[in-house]
Length: 555
Image (cartoon, rainbow, N blue to C red):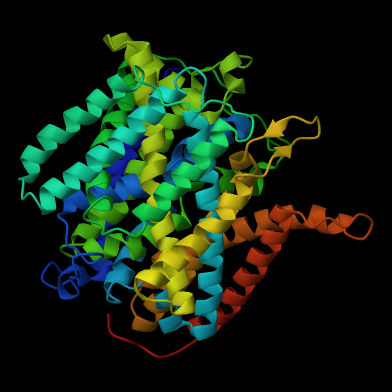
């Protein structure tokens, strides 16, 4: 069997879902293009800045599409087979992930651009608000840690890493130039786009000619040096106005990611590649973990992601021009990410059992697979591989600075810190723990070093999916209070995500807890799992009480 029929089926289901279910949601939520959005009523030129639908879609898509929809599906496919991963990506994104993203943006708009945490405070209570902020902030630390380490690993890859680092740096500089040109130079968007996009293409080809590499001096590893440079970039990028980097870089990144997605889909439809990897490896994965519940936390962002709700309510909602753009940006953005996940999974599906590529990292599997898809159309494999690796880095870069900005927002909300000094302090504190985590060298039972991102991936996926469930819980409380049936479309996804993620957290905690009596070990991952589990239960308790309220509020 070839990839084409499955790819066509997935695309058809996504289109049908967007047109049919997306419109149903818009009617249930009562979207009105005439109702002013916070981007206009609270416009400040820094965070509240209206953006046209297609521009905002590109920015939102590039912000939410980090390493998750690539790494998660490939790992899940490796461990459990491609069929369970594919089914969860398609149906999970349609009925859970896209609903979560869409309702997060709409809920934020109806609350003056407030974050999901503030919505929880308004409709569940102040104590639940603090629990939620603590949970979110901890979850963001794992996003920053995992994605910083994955990015630095791609920069030190022996064959192409230096060129990818050069191209990624040039890409960020082009984004800064575009932001200045659009907002200070008053250059028309169409002209700036015609100039900037070819420059990004040139950076891809130019990067391998001037690779950025750090020598292994003995006192600091090259990857560790890149980790600190990336975290330094996050510090600066999270504090400057969104129009200078976040919006233009996201706009460029959206086109870049659209191109990557299109190249992958063309390869899927026309390449004629046959599926060789097993559809199902068993109910216990090759890594020893059970399919239930670990499939649903491993695929992560490819089907549903709590991080998307933070982006949607933290930055995207503050830029929505008209309410009806929520369907395009929120629901459509998640379906685009699911397509990325389908393409990523396909790069694994074409590999036979025993292929040497299966031992490589997900980024290398993805890059090699994408190059294989497009080389039949006359594109040089090395160029295609560089393009894919830069796309991988772009996915992550576009998320890292947004994540740091969200961490700053959350910590400032929790502490009350304000002004420039408050923002800088909150940003430094948000980046402090990731800076420690990426320096830790972990080894497996055989003594071989384990990448930091791999150590944190399971807890990242679990906390991320649990965050989606908790976000849906807060939104369901709000929707239930205002009456109508809209709360039902968030309640069922919420219940499923809560069960799967709490189950997965329990699997992390129990084996560790069983050893405490004989061999006490204060390991990072299980301890954090206990904290997250406790915060989640406390928030659930308060939210269930909120759901029993009879009060009705206006939309």
